Length: 231
Figure 1 (cartoon, rainbow, N blue to C red):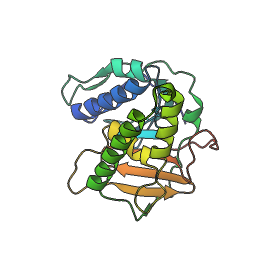
Figure 2: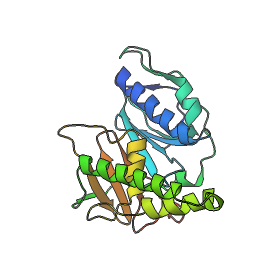
Figure 3: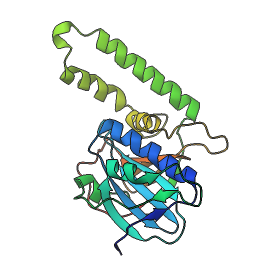
Figure 4: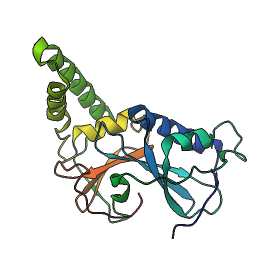
């Protein structure tokens, strides 16, 4: 059940700093970004949608104390409210921003459970190499365009061709991996490899630093049935 909430307390100062970094990256792609917050079981799941990638990004942080709520707020206002300079005893949010009317994607979250790991996903180094090759290809194809065709529409066509390709022996599009890297989710973490999970029609790229979720078979987020859950 959603209940009024005024403040948050994180398990330690690092959790607040990690959330601030995630919010900053989301705001880089959308200065008016909103995030959906779901708290329960000592954790806070933060959902955002960077528009350049057409995926959902999920960052989970540990909380101190009991919090149970589900609310959508401005990412910028939440970032301003975060205390990232305090000690482990004081780091938190002085006051949560007022709720906002959520964008359509905020009512279209991945399922709560039923996730199963799927084989075929390359390791982090191979994923990084694939991304580097894709970026190089985009730049080369863009540079080869005649001046009269060097438009946003032509560049979008090139981007859709490249980023819709799947990685390894999976259905995961390269744009999901690109999103994970751009949001800081593909940092080295020995002993904690990335994994591909599925639940129904959903795909989820899980890393130690966050997850990227989207519908499978090339689906974006525009035709989802409304489901409420957390990851």
